Amino acid sequence: MEKKHCHNELVSFEDRDHEALMGVWWTGILLKKRAKHFFSNFLSSEVQFNIMMVLKYAEKPLTQSELGEQLLVDKSNITGLLDRMEKSGLIRRLSVPDDRRCYHIELTAAGREILEKVEKPYHEHVRKLMSVFSPDEINDINRYMSRLEKAVTAEESTAFNDRS
Image (cartoon, rainbow, N blue to C red; front, side):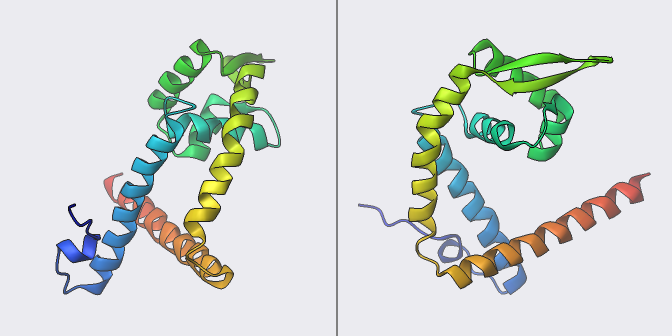
């Protein structure tokens, strides 16, 4: 049987910053692959699950644009995703009073039923995966990822302003 390698066993890094960033990147790719496999029994993609979770726990009805912003999904991509989910009977679009260009997105009964089936196993899977860390380490990871996200967002904003 072939041995599985971590990112840093395949490539020698002299730059520790690069190694750390590639560790985050590589782990993200692995998590995305696992999510695709996990959700394949319930939905066509992990993105559908994310959309359904955001809709379920939203404090107010969300428009297509708001949903895309929360999930960091481009407007053109969210339209196609929602089209497929609506066709599958998972969500419905409702007209927004006073704005004919907007729709609120909501889960259907069928969407809620599927979410009920997948949400508990998903949370169990997350707990199992994260059980390699102590509660303090989980807090550290959350803080580190928040700081990294802010750095990436600030860089993105600076790059956008440089192009303007």
